[in-house]
Image 1 (cartoon, one colour):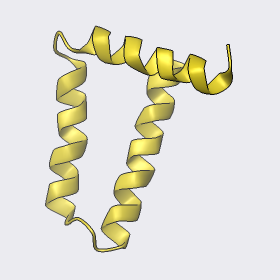
Image 2 (cartoon, rainbow, N blue to C red):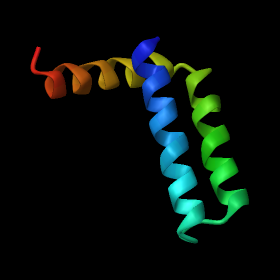
Image 3 (tube, rainbow, N blue to C red):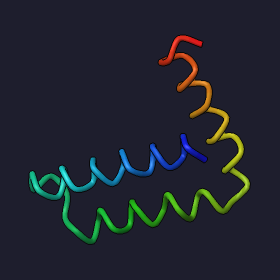
Length: 62
């Protein structure tokens, strides 16, 4: 849960930076943000979580 919350926060910050930098419009960012929550409620949630856990282990050196 901690990893997925951290990734959620990172994506929120990234979306905010892209909106502020006029790289993406607000409706597009909202669709991207909501698609992440939609993906989390599908069968793809476990593979995505496993991938993120593996990347976290690699980055942290464990």
